[in-house]
Image 1 (cartoon, one colour):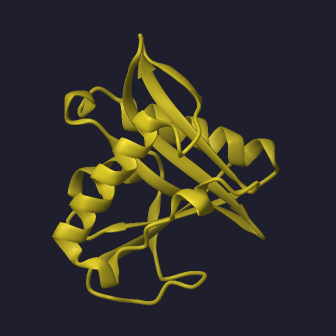
Image 2: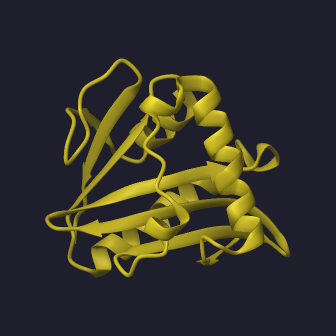
Length: 151
């Protein structure tokens, strides 16, 4: 049974997943096109991070940054063993609940153009393609998405 609970980005199993995500994304897109929130950024007061656990095994993580006017999903990753089991969708739903609890109705994210499974998961959850937002700029590797939450 998967349990979703708050985690700290500097906890060793969480940091290991963050490091794996960094290596994967940098290898795929190059550092210049990776928007990698650091451990310090993820530890800020306006960020909440969740992990999905099966007993003592961490299956995946994700974070929500509470920003003026919207929330942003960051650092979504599941372990290879957890893929296809609904773990990412469960984390995403829990992050949306955290955003809604603060009265946020707009949730945005940036994902990679080659992350087809992630894009499919986000579309299934109700996200739609949109243009760049915040400090992001248009490029050939980023896909920007948005969802309006019902409060």
